Image 1: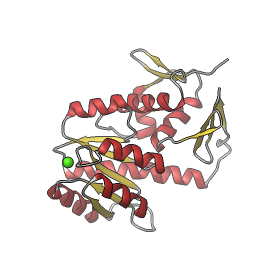
Image 2: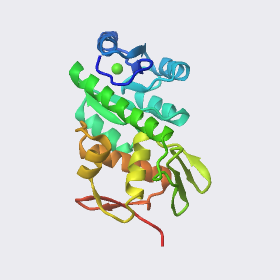
Image 3: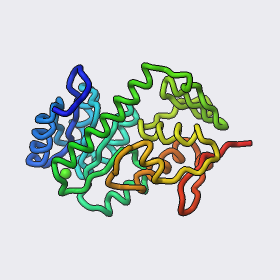
Image 4: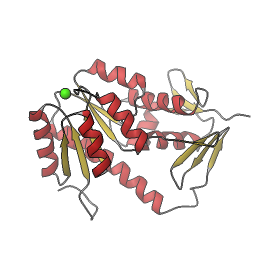
Length: 237
Ligand code: CA
């Protein structure tokens, strides 16, 4: 048991159609104190997520019926939840990062159970930290306005031209980090260190993926790429 906080065990939904992998992942997570459930395909995953409201989803990309990509999109559209995507090859991860699909981290098969548990725990720590911040508003939780984008830090909500935009927890954190440093160039490494606090598999590509998703949701001009260095938030003058 490696969790620090009291209260109910965090719920993890494992979505994987290969029973051997699903069972071994679930068993290992259970041994670490997680409340774990398995879904064998995309439809089951969406139903289980609606019913159980998992804290983290471990999601295989290749699923019969609704694939992992679509499951990830539909999950995020309903309720932001951290997703650890399992892929079969590194180049698949590259494609997904390029698409900015909204997964928070990626793990390529075969992976070690130790690695998987570490990733799940790290995603969960970020959620817990966000929840703590949400219940303990600080003087630094004022709303931020960038052009037609309004960010409520206390509520962790974003609107664009008055319409609510659903961001994943990580996308929200990246946006706020950049928005609180307008026009400042933030390196990919800085964003990784500050927001993830640990090395993710995709490395700096993971940062690129989240920026891509933010541009898709909030407008292409919001975040400027500083070639070879990182990103900066553009402030309309
Ligand atoms: Ca599979």
